[in-house]
Length: 423
Image 1: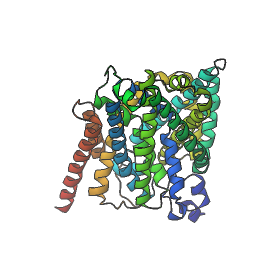
Image 2 (image 1 turned 180 degrees about the horizontal axis):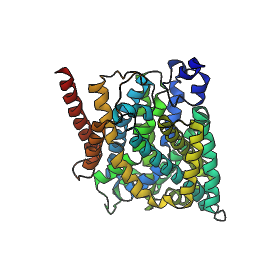
Image 3 (image 1 turned 30 degrees about the horizontal axis):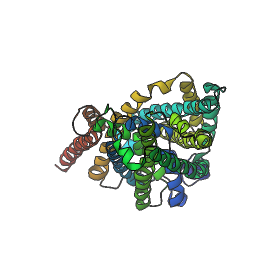
Image 4 (image 1 turned 45 degrees about the vertical axis):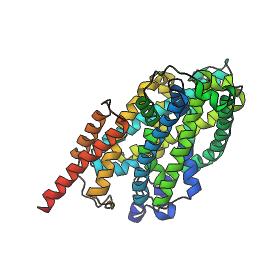
């Protein structure tokens, strides 16, 4: 019995998605499986909505570059997290113990829990509102509840079911996205007409980049390890994250931005209706929302399971239940403030992780059960807190500044500690 509990390759660990242990090399997945699951996370309506907000606020060229810069920042953050996850085979929750301590890990874990439940509730509500837009006689809330229950079920069954759904959703979403973009450009008289559209410029370039980063900050930083711990090597994790964010994420945000630029409305459902695509695109939108929401529940439960002695499948049910309640009471109305919150709180975590990985552990984390970790690693919290504060300083690109500052502060702490130990 003792061997069964401690060996991560046992059926028990596998059935619980290795939420408390390293994913062994024998359980790592193929490149295509990892890529499709990862793309399923980013093909999300909320990113289209963010694109819509950018599209009605900036001209085409500004929107284009803001989206690309945002995706590039996300790619860097995700690649850093992916390398650490592929190297160690650990989830975000387990990795956070090295930078925030055994008990200190509760802070990033709670952040993940709050953000993933919030994101799930928004997605559940969007399923209801999308259905109501097409079939006005069907009320929003009952459909949101049914959709929330379905998404909870697929997340409960882990990466196998998530992969199956993503295999269906990703190509369908891609096809309808291309059709919508072509129709939008055509309606403006081609690219020349698109470039000639004058917007009110109600958003700065830096704010647009921040929105773009905030739309998938949680995914790039906190979801990435939960996917990439299944990657067979570091090269796979880097290639997958670059494709996912530079191509997949950019495409989805462009989808929303170009449609809104052409119609003058940031709501993706209104855009699709104006293009005559609402009916045929309905299935694509539902699959889009579903593939991302199940990822939220999966990663949120995985991270919380690393800190709690509770089976991941039970936590999935709790996450889903709370998310459905939030969907019913209108959490969706806080969408804008929620995105801004994510853009400030999440990215600095990467700076803290990277400094520890490079300078404290020198790219070689000790086994978790053997590591001498403090109860609370205050240097991690101080570095994260300073990075968080810097994100509110309106200079250059705050979403980059906060990561760099958190990295520098944490590096100073680590180097000072190394010097004390050497003395």
